[in-house]
Length: 58
Image (cartoon, rainbow, N blue to C red):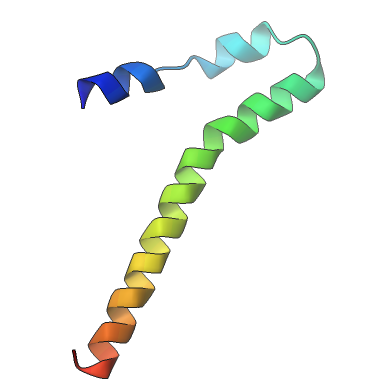
């Protein structure tokens, strides 16, 4: 778990400050939000699957 946390420590503010242009800044912001969007989608999928299973009586 420590290895993952070391790999994920990215200073977004520093990357944006050193960005060559505005399109790079947009990419950094989008790239920093992608893991959260994936986790939210996965949680929603798991919730719906468990809800359907509960409704069917399994």
